[in-house]
Image 1 (cartoon, one colour):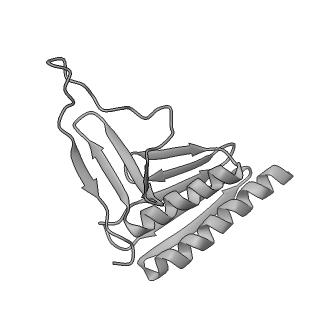
Image 2 (cartoon, one colour; image 1 turned 90 degrees about the vertical axis):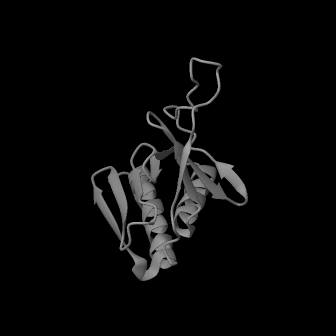
Image 3 (cartoon, helix red, strand yellow; image 1 turned 30 degrees about the vertical axis):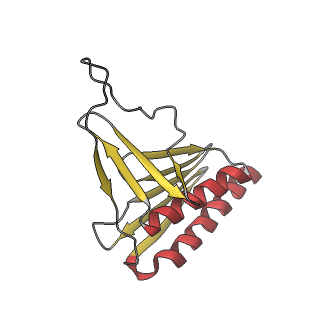
Amino acid sequence: MDDDTAARLAVLDRLAAALREAVGASAAVGVTASGRLGLLEVRPVRDDVCPVHVVAEQFLLVTVGRAGRFELGWTPQDVALAEQVLAAAVAGRVEERGGLTSRTVVVTADGAEHPPPSPSRLGRLRSAAGGRPRREARWTYAPYRA
């Protein structure tokens, strides 16, 4: 294992340890590593909390909810954002917004909203008539330790 992979897996282990402490008995936190790939999965006991998955390879990919995909690098700022996103998911500060054809996830951390910086994230759809946004539904998640 090269030094970059070891450093990335160490970050993943640190994220997992913080999640284990934050969720307590309300979820199981599992980490799997194979070669250059690391996977972190949070398996909650209840269905009303935000699902969380983290993939560590070339990029740090944090997935929260059904559509929140944060494609981050390995800079200290990116790792700090990943920690904030995971803490927000555990605290129930993730909201999904969308309609029939698209969803956007917004995470509230440090009093500010953070939509995923992913280039694949679609904005709100505009209808052909009048250019007004289509109606959006909103889904929220409960905190892990409610």
